[in-house]
Image (tube, rainbow, N blue to C red):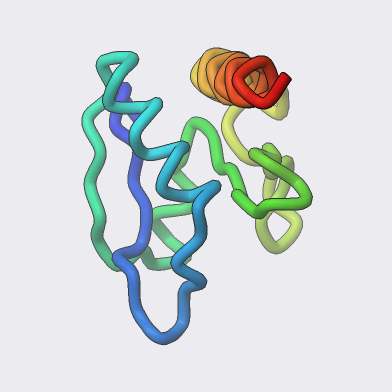
Length: 98
């Protein structure tokens, strides 16, 4: 919300993944503020965008939370920006291997 990326802090309930770390780094590189705080369901209902990160999914936008549409129901600008940056990082890594 408002160019701030909110994410729960690392804990025993959250996988400490490379995709999450890379997403946070890319968000900062693109001028987003990143806040690691516990997030309640009521906060999610007010979010402009919600994403999930996982190695197999990369960065996945969430359309609904408990039946309520997230934001305006469309993929958000910030997700598009970070997803593109993430894919560019993957291509750079592949080129280094070649």
